[in-house]
Image (tube, rainbow, N blue to C red):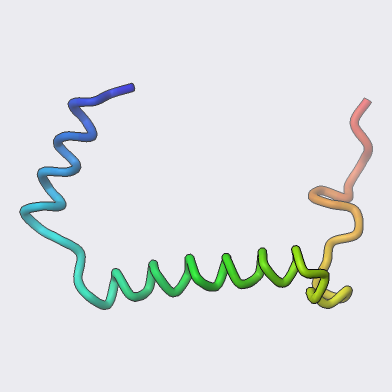
Length: 62
């Protein structure tokens, strides 16, 4: 991996941290994703919101 790249990115974050609104937005999206996964795991997710055939649906691959 490119450790120097990660160090440069971390230095930028220290100098210019994300705003409180941005942190709240990311935290909210993570909580929403966790709530959806939990509902799916508990079998409480509605059937109309579930894919039947997965991605694609076009022509079958040879």
